[in-house]
Image (tube, rainbow, N blue to C red):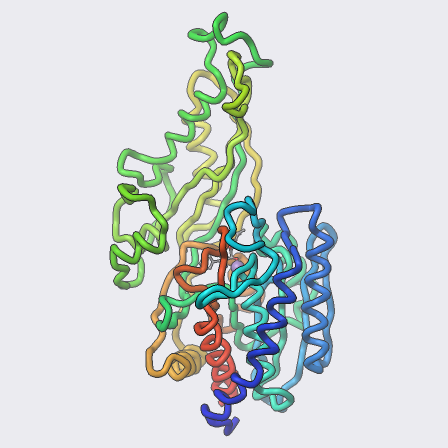
Length: 448
Ligand code: BES
Ligand code: MN
């Protein structure tokens, strides 16, 4: 408790090499939750994570799985009598690496270049796991608080068995404060606390216009093909300004944050000449208004396409919903809109892929005071920005449902150029060091 900041800084320096090498070992495991062929790797990464906590002399370490789900790790280490319990969350599953050719170094071979360590999961979110680990190593066996680790294995596929996991292990997961290291900071050198996240609804739709493919010369002009029909359905999802045109979806106001145009251009990777879509402030469009993207399409390939009318075509719709909306309501609005916008009598069927609720956090109270003080120290006097993010962490709403009294702090290792989910995902190493320091200071402050 009386640990001075300079002692803690020294200890961060001492533990960083081991933390870095543990991160590299985790990145070498291809724990892609979206790929059933690699679920063995997800199991292996759960085991590797469990081993890391066993080595820290935790009181208990367990790998837990719900039938049909992927393994999570729950571990507990008691602090001083009467100290608060802090739950540290991260996830050990990763997104698919996609085309290896787009990477400048092999996705599962951690590689340092410039300021960064590259690799799938090097940031999202294996660095979240080892940031927690680093903070724990700094305190060693003098933990200022009791700690519960919850390292999930299916975050990237919508956390389907999470509510069952929370229910089954409710007693063990009870905490006064939870720290979710799965978001990021405002910029290199400028920390942030994430105070709002959008929710997610993913829906696969299929449009059918024919029982089977037929000659496009014989029947084109009379019978609509499914691909053209699907294009009409999809184009109904936005208005001419690029705002989402689905009636009924909730929008809210965003925090007053200046996000300069040059940063938006550089960080988004938008091609030259691309116009922004939608209306409202840019952070509203990113954080507190709904958005709809098409992330996949099943249709015949252009190479080899024959002169036939395509009988059926499919699309995956990825809809982000604003804090204040619910997935149940937003899904209902989306399906109603789609059904009202299928032209020419085509059949539209849909399947829900996954959903995750949005979150708006009340960023006040003692845990927030402790976090702001810790972050300001770790970033040498620069206070954290309260920011929103457009992405989703379904765990937060689920956890708050189960433990409404807990304070939730959303932190993380990402920066604007992390490229999570993309090729060349990379962790900014100097910023990572500050994240570890900030969390070590936070644990100290939370005890006070
Ligand atoms: N780390 C992200 C969440 C995030 C995104 C935080 C952007 C900060 C900025 C998380 O791992 C993620 O990608 N979540 C999925 C959840 C979905 C599958 C329910 C997402 O947002 O697509
Ligand atoms: Mn993540």
